Image (cartoon, rainbow, N blue to C red; front, side, top):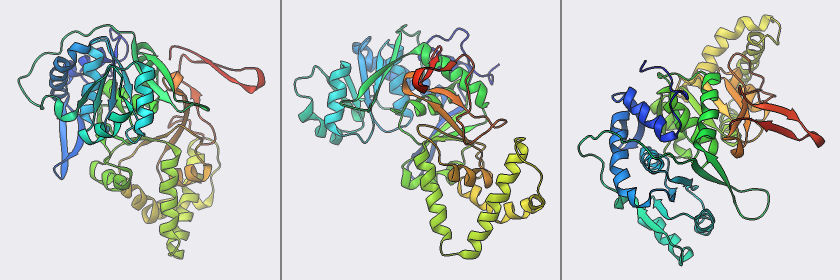
Length: 397
C-alpha cells in the first residue's frame, strides 16, 4: 500500500529507503521550505529527480567520504541521498561551527568532497584547509533544479552511512561511525512506538548534524511518508509554527525552556492573565495524570473546559494549533517546563539516547507518558545497569 510505512523488508540502505518512498508516492508532498516570501512544496518525485541530477555531479567521488556544510533543507537531503547512492559516507557539519573546527573534522574523517552553502563560507574556511586533498563545491556549483525526469538508479551497497562528530568530554570532536543498518533499525522501531502517519507534518528545527534530528525529522518521516517543513531560524520559530502548522516537533530542552521563559515574561505584567494561565496549567496537569492512570478525580477538573478555552487553546494556537506529538531529547527536560506544556494541552514526550545508539534508546509514548522518566526502551534494545550504576545497552542500533 502506498500509505503504509516503509520498514525493513527489502530496504537495506538509506538510499534504498528514499528510492522506495519515491516509487510509492511520487506525487505526494515531501518537503516545504521558505522561498520568495512564501512556502514552496516539493514532491517525492521532484526530490528523486534532484537526486539523479546531483548523482551525476558527485559520481567522480563514488565510495569516498563527503561532508555537507549547509542549512537544513531539501538540498541538504538531496545531496545526502545522492552521495549515499554512490556508496559514499556522509559527514554532516554544524551550520554555525567555526572554520577551524570544520577543518579538523574534514582532516580527521578523510573527507574528499565538501558541499558548502555559499562562497562566502568557503572563503572563511580556505586558510584552514591548505594542504588537504579536498574538492569544495558551493551550492551555485551544483546543477540547477529541473530538467527531464529520470528513474532513480540502483544504489551502491556501502556499509558505513555517516560519521557524526560530537564534542565529547575532552579534546577534539570525536567521530561516531553509524551504518545504514544501525539507523534503519532504530528508526523503524521509533516509528512504531511514536505512531507517525502520512498525514503528519514535521517542523525541522535542529541541524541535521545532530543525530536526533537526522533520525527524527529526516529518516522517520521518510519511512512514514510524512511531510517535513524547515524552520528558517530560531527567532522566526513562532512565525513558522503558525505558518506551516506542524503536527510533530522534535527539539532539545533548551528550546522548550526558551519558550517557557517567553511565556513567563509575557505574563509577568498581567497578574490576572497569569493567574488564569497558572490555573489552566494546574488543572490540565491534573487531567493529564488522571488520563495516564496516575491521578484521582478532583472537583477542579470541572473547570478544565473553561480554562482551556481561556488559556490552553490560545497557547496551542501560538504553536500552530495542530501539534499532537512533541519530543524532547539530548538533555533532561525540567519538570516545570514539561508540566506547563502538558497542562496547556501539548503532549511533550521525553526520550533518551546517544549518538552511538543511532541515537534513540528510549522514549515516552502518548499512552504511557511520565515526564520524570525517559520512557521505556525501544523494542529490541537490551538494557541493564552495570557496575557503578553504568547504563549498558545492546541492540541493532
